[in-house]
Length: 177
Image (cartoon, rainbow, N blue to C red):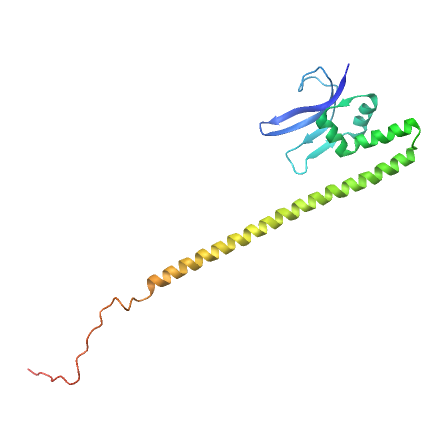
């Protein structure tokens, strides 16, 4: 029996999330499975991955084969790195202490990268929001200035169009009745 670590689709149309499961390779995608290892939500940024590290590592050491997408997920979480290091212990190339030291160093670097990406996403979104706000304010002020100029032009007295009234001359004789 070929055992696979693969994704099982759940969720609505256009908002899918997945369960990471261990299943017989002949079983349908969303069918019967042996064990649920975790969940994967690709809709968030960065993607949310909650996986049982020890159970997944145990299945990999027993020979379960991950699909391509699951391989990428397991690599991202460091499970394949740990498996690789543990195989080095089995062959005698490393000791348990060296494995833990190398894995913890790798995990710290990975955590730093993920936190850096999250911080950059937050700063980019606030920067875009402030730029949008500035653009909206400038457009609002330009529109207000245009309306003010138009109302000022409409309210200004039109001197050239009004007829000038003639005043009687001082030299003209007065008539009395």
